[in-house]
Length: 581
Image 1 (cartoon, rainbow, N blue to C red):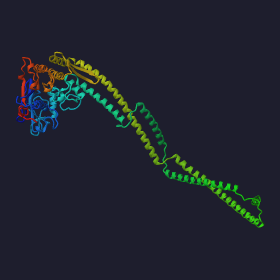
Image 2 (tube, helix red, strand yellow; image 1 turned 90 degrees about the horizontal axis):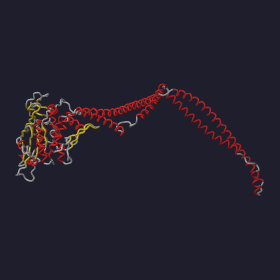
Image 3 (cartoon, rainbow, N blue to C red; image 1 turned 30 degrees about the vertical axis):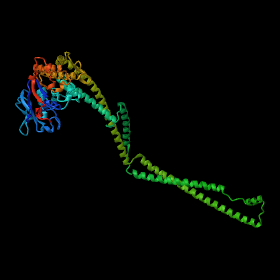
Image 4 (cartoon, helix red, strand yellow; image 1 turned 45 degrees about the vertical axis):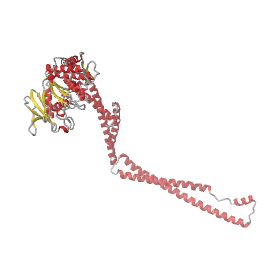
């Protein structure tokens, strides 16, 4: 239970609290001007200070850790774990929580800092709060899908505007598992079922992410069916076997390259000889054709031409023609002798080259026979490398097949485990009916006292885990939506007290009553006061004075007896901190 809040600076308005209803009011003075406001007097700051000392996360430049509050230290006096203590947290050293008072019976004890002041670091302080307020036993453990002391506290001290949007969340982007685990814990359900549900979701998401990574190329490989992968592995296995056989019969010839070079030289020489024969054979054909077509003209051919022309040749001319005919015949005879000699020479050359080609071909055949049975060392190395590459592909395929089988099996397992978890959760839900039905009864009773018609707290189990909802007639209005949160929170603290948990305070800012009809505000405050007395807790509520439904309270209810602090806008000293920033 929170007994007091104070600070290390003069001007701060210290406030003391008692069991039951505690009101913190922001007055608008008659002397205040039109531009004065009650929205910066410190109502929300007071709640933030309490949350700050109860281990809330902080960031430089935000909340209480702003430049204007450098050097400030805030203290909350409270009863914790059966001991009256005071916890102090400085804005300049937010990681240390100084402890004053006896801590007898606490499972962990304060340790002095460098200045000799006993206290805890953030981790241990939050662990101690978990033990004292909610019966959590794991002080050092953090992370994982389990109840967090800070998250549980956030349902009893809603410290930001977004915390007043829905009963089951204390900030807008709260994860589903966080909602399920903490609300299940507070409602007496098996929160571990919600944790397992999230673990199965994580596994499914990981499988989906892996498939997507393969599909988009972020991970090597193509998304193929198991049958396609098996067919490809079989093809590569046969190739691997062929490569293995080739390696087993491969023989290395040390002189392989030398013999190969000689064979290549022979081949080059053979090609040159064959080409030369082709050229000479073409010349032989031309020479032989020339012998057939080329001959000396007939002796009377020229005279016959003149006779036909009607010209008579003189005797001297006839003698000259006879000499010319003899000379021409001699030239023709000489040419025929020359061509005959050339033909004979060409035929001899062709014959020699043909014999040479035959000899070279036989010699080359011997070299090729040697090379055919053996190979060069580099060829063996290349064959070995190809064999290794194929074997690597086969191994990779085997791994992918195993991975795909595992993924398929795991996906099926997740489905089966999800169905089994849903069944087990439903059984556990029935076994705990006597416990959680009390929470539903509280909510129904509280909402009925506000609206004459009982609302419903709904707990369902579907394929994604626990699902929570609240229903009150007229829910679309803002005021009734806020009263859903009020009834839910009041149910949580009453239910927690009935279960024997150590949490014994509920804190609301004025936001809880935004848009709420004055009559429901009056009923809500009276209900909170009555339940606080019945179940032994304190309800702290910060309100603007004009939100207090004075005319709607019942005659027997004296709200003024519950006012613990008034802040005013008369001047800056009237605010909680004694100044405005």
